Length: 444
Ligand SMILES: [Zn+2]
Image: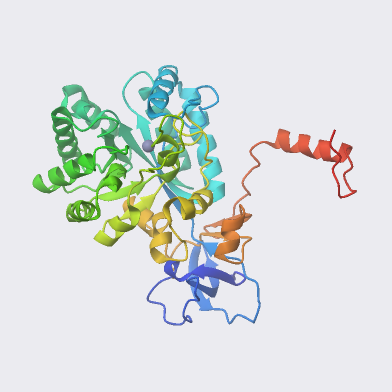
């Protein structure tokens, strides 16, 4: 017997566009529907005639994290970078990497995936530091977690090295070895290009070697490129040029793509067109970029380098948004919560979730960029997967962190665990011993 869910408010952008039995969406792009599911898939989508003033929970399909670093997550406490500079992050990252163990990677990755899954993530792409002593623990640990989590969450892994390494014999051997260790399409090749230094001739050789290796191995590419306010998009321009000239057929993603935002409108538009012509995709990473870039001698920054998401979308480039670093030397915050990221991006990147192009970077475009089987759109036969929120409108989602319940394959997941139950208990204890119940808390 199919099970009928209570009525929900869903973005029309996340429901089959072919369905013609639904009323037009409201001004928030939402429609009230009733969903039925059986054996883990959606079996019916029907309109719900909403009574005047009827309060319904807003729901989304599970979200996608297209750019993370699970091998170094949660390492800020031991390796902080209080100045918040790129140089400070590199130095702390290097020190932490040299002592990185398999046990640490397994613990960090497991904790990250557990939190993300309960928050409503269904897929994560993680880069792995792939040169030096921490590389093998990183790959061994995350390949094990890729297998362990496969029934619940898709985990893609990307090799992260300085891009020029791919032009060496060791680089070519590394590429072949890594691709053979993972399942088809779940291991990608990447690298750092164009930041903090401008791309050099050696970088161009490394990038070409990477693209040709990836193409011959059938492995998609995801680069850290132009993570800087300087350079005017020289890195992404080089990627677009080489991909077209050498007819690279595998998907190529440019993560960061910040410095092109400093170009004038006409040059930016030409570069965005060239990226669209080369079928490049972009992952914008607002939390790390806004924290790490634009430091100016202790002043509040006036310039905030960030991928020009809307201009790229207008040119036809697929753009997703990711959280990047979580509690590591590159960014002290974050918790693998895609709704927090969505809430952050309203003011940070002017992405409004009631607009199709504002929601797509977290849902449909991110799914397409990662090459996932499901695009995140509900239709008959799609997974019975939902994130249901204790929010009755977009504004209620944006005004406070929402309570949520996640449905996967028709089954409700446990709630996200409190991050610090010991501290929550201490707070309860304080309130209980200082006037709890009177409505006032006595201080001192
Ligand atoms: Zn990154």
